[in-house]
Structures are given as C-alpha cells and as structure tokens.
Amino acid sequence: MQQGDRYDIVFLLLLVTSVFLVSYHFTNTNISDERLYSTEAYLLIKEGSLPKIYPLLPITTAGWLILFGLVRYAFAATSYVSIILVALLLYRFELSRLSNGHESVIITSLFVCNPLTVWLLSRNMTEPLFALFILGVAYIIFGTKLTPSRSFIAGLLSVLAYVTRYAGIIIFPAALLFLILKKKGIAVTVSYASSTMILCGLWVFNKLTYGSFLTSESYSLASLQRQSDLGLSIVSGVVAKSVLGIGILFAYSLPFLFVVAVRRRVFLKERSLLTFVIFYWAVHFAYFFAISLALARAASGFGFARYLWPTLPLVLTLLHVPSEKSWIKYSLAALCMILGIIEGVYLIGYVDSHTPFVMGWNDFLESLT
Image (cartoon, rainbow, N blue to C red; front, side):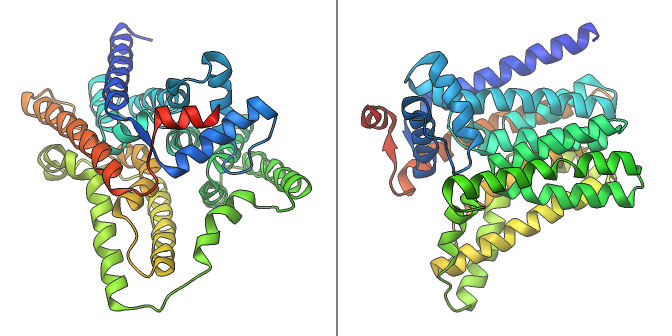
C-alpha cells in the first residue's frame, strides 16, 4: 500500500464517521421494520430466541448489544461498520479499475454522501449489510482473477446476502449464468454452485425449526396476497413514484455526473455488471408494482429508492472519472457531497413526519426492558 492510498483511506474513514455523526444527531426515531430487527436482536441475547426474519442483521446486532449493552448506538453499529467496509471495498474496486486513487476517492465519497446512505447510517436496517455482500460478490467476480477458492467465497457471500435480505436469491442465477457464459471453467463454476448446498441446509433448518422453508419471504410477501384491479391511476402513480425514487438516489450528484462524466463519455462498458444492475432493478420494480396493486395505490417512492440503494456502489463502479486534475471536477464533487448530506438530513425529518408507527428511541429502549 502506497502512502497516498493510506491518506485516501484515512480520509474515507473520517468522512464516513463524520456523516454518521450527522445522521446520528438528527435521527431520534425508528420505524416499524427497524424495531422488528432490533427486538429480534434483543430477544436473542435475552432469551436465546433465534431470529427468523432477515436473521443475519439481528445476529450481528446482538453482538454489539453484548459488547456495548442496551444503548442506542449499539443498534446503529452494524450499519456504521457495514458502510465503512463498503466504502473501503468500493475504493479498492475502483482503484483496481482506474489506477488512480484520487478518482477512486471521488466515486467512494459520492456513495458515502448519498442521501439514503445518510438516512441509513445510524439505523438498524438490512440495506447496508446487504450492500456489503453484493459488492463483495461483484468485486470477486469482476475485480479479481477467479479461482475455485475465490469463487466459493463469492458463493458464501451470496448466501450471507440472502440471509440478510431474501432478495439476495437473485444473485445466484445471475452469477452462475455469468460464470457459464464467460466460460470461467468447470471448477470455478462448481465451486460457486456448491454454496447453494448451504442455502438448502438453511431452508431445511427453517422448516424443522419454524415450520416454513421460507420464513423471511412468508413475512414479507404476505402483504401481496390482496391484489386490486389494475387501473391507469395505479400505473401512472407507480411510474411517477419510481422516477421519484431514482431521483432520490441520484439527483444530488447530477452536477458532477452530467458536467464531468456524461459530457465526456467516460462510462465504463462493463456489460455483465450493468446487466446485473438492470436485472436487479427490474425485479424490484416488479415487486414495487405488486405492492402498489396490493395497496390499491402507488407505494412510496422513498421505499423504491431503498430497494435500489444496495446496488448504488455497483452503479458507481460503472463510472470512469477523467484522470486529469481539474478544480471544476473536484469542486463539483464537493458540491454534490454537500447536497447529498443536506438532502439526507431532510429525508430523516421527512420520513419521520410521513411514516406511520414511528417511535422514539428512548421509548423503544424502555419498552424492551
């Protein structure tokens, strides 16, 4: 590691920590999903009750509760550490592709200062941990020379992604199809595929323990059982809310993306990675549409943005920043970072005031005891 790389890493660590402190200061409430995961973590250490809904997050949170006790920041620790690791891995991924530490820092900083990153940083939510595993799989498959052992590690990360959020199941067919079409070798493909045996073992464990193979899916997809008639208002509302969700993810970065990147045509042509991102977005758009039908109205655009956020690091890896030094480039990047943090703070207040069943952290901690 060169001295410049060390400075870059220190900067990124300080940036994540600074954004975390801002997020933590303005976040005083939690939402219903957050309370579910937090309660599962508390019951795991209090009663030894194994979590069955998105189990990996409660398990990791329980570790922080053992270390720090029943305090609010213990519930935020998993997201904080996950986003630090995502930032460092994204930096490394970009460095391997761009061979320029400064440009890698810019891309990573845009991720750290994304409005949804700001919103998620101090919450006990599944998205940061899920994003870490997705990026880990992508880094191994697209950013390293694949060997059977690395392929197996990518498979293990895919399993962890699934245990974090059941949407991780779509990683398996996408990765296997890539390995087969790109002719990465039988040993590499079989090594990755062998991880599905762990997945099958998990399903059997769920059936024996909880009476259902798919515990997280049963919980999450139950809301889709009631479907309303398809109408123009729902279709137009879904399209509008989808555009809003994408805007929440990327609007803060438009000055940098358009002026620096798009006009100079410097997007990398990584078709396989881009195809996976499109596939992931399409699946979640279909899910968003199904939820809207169940609600008989368009679901939240903010919720759609949350569905897409775990792929944000992958989207950013498709961007190739011009290598020449330019005060305009760095100034625009800094402006976008500031705009992202401001929008993130606004989101914290907006979601608190527009989300039902919001609860203060002090009240929630008292309810656990």
